[in-house]
Amino acid sequence: MLRGNYTARIDAKGRLKVPTQFRRHIQETHGAEVYVTSLTGESVRIYPLSEWESIEQRLALLPSMDPARRKFLDRTNYYGQQTTIDGQGRVLIHP
Image (cartoon, rainbow, N blue to C red; front, top):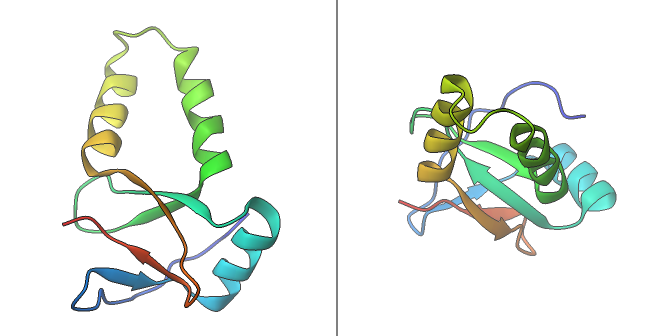
């Protein structure tokens, strides 16, 4: 599990540098595929793809009309994208 937060900037090409400790743990435990999303558009949440798929499986067990489920999925799908951590430890953040 990753804990904490990290203040970072997105470079001119829209890439976010993942902190070394986080990147190392993610890649050793889950590989380089990640799901990048946000709840508000003001901050980024990065999930190893396997963890995001686990969240999706748990959400699938809830009723499809559950308001909390719908709100969460609406926001995370709107802001979300599947991507790969590149060789320099960056992920592309979709505008």
